[in-house]
Image (tube, rainbow over all chains, first blue to last red; front, side, top):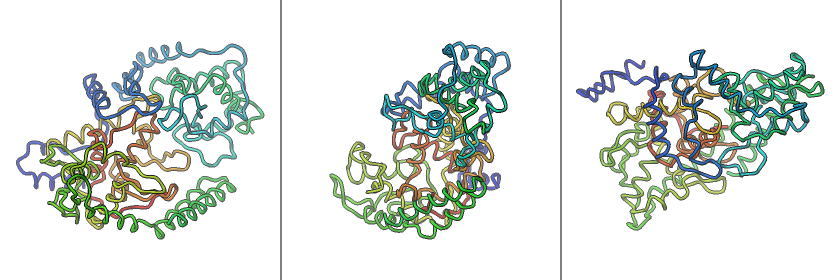
Length: 211
Length: 270
């Protein structure tokens, strides 16, 4: 199908050297630093700041740069180095990391935050249900991330598990360098208390997630 | 028209409530499909097409001219099948343009309007459509039954296609997202919304065959420039400039990927 339409296009544009290769929509096989610089320049030229979404957001940090360069599959050694760097940036609070699961459920439901349509200072949500199954009563959940149903029931709520859940939400890239999950604490979307409330939603035995 | 869409919104709520009671995603999906075919039958798209026709013929701007001599690629004023061959390279502007970018070009050249004035309100709301939205409905409708055949042979078209592809996979912004973060895996969804793998012909074809489209959930008629704009909003990125090369590049990448499909829009979306 694609081949025949290519031939048709090339027939119309006979003589054009450009017709030597068909257009393919698959992900480019390689990305270079030069490619990234070009794309960033295009974004700077063709995008504009709006509200809280400033142009600083088109600049790539080291992690984004490396994930783009390695098409989300960095070699193991590099991945470990990136993950260690991201881990260092997580300010783990001391003491219990379990907040209020009821507030956590509301934060998980809320899909607002960090968009140009959101106001600075307005508490954001975690958009959790966009990608994850959580409480069994919520049938409208996304599937981009794994189901978190019975998360605490399966793992308990030890200090290590609390720390893992907190860290995963704060900065998922500390555990999987090119994870598709946003770095919700690192990005400034969620506060320390909000992340604790989400940890409670995942780990509190009373949370519907664990019923 | 507004009442009809409110009515539809109630149906949607009812469909979700039903689904929630069963708490089974499969049931909800069936309800949504049923709802989808229901809204298509009662779609008010034709009203938007009529509004667009009035605007196409209306004399406006410093030159008190209509858009009737606008060349959308098939010659001045030729509308039949024109949308199906967009985006494409235009020699007079020496760049690749999609429908809205070309309309903006005609507003500036034929009607003598400034870019600032003509782009002041490119996206409407439920009370009033934008000029671009009405015009898009009118023009796209005249490609119904025509196979989508965007520009894919000129060097600039090929360059813009490659740019669109690179943008599609480029991760950036406050949440590290690319278009592919959501649109590259089979069978995934956000909440109950299925996510098409937009760099595959199978998923891109029905998309390019039905945009621009009427969206029942907010009673608005929406264009592809808006669709891309709203994705970037949710990607936590800054805003694409209307008609910018980056926005046209993504549109061309998508349309070339879905080329060959018979246009059957303007569509009706949830």
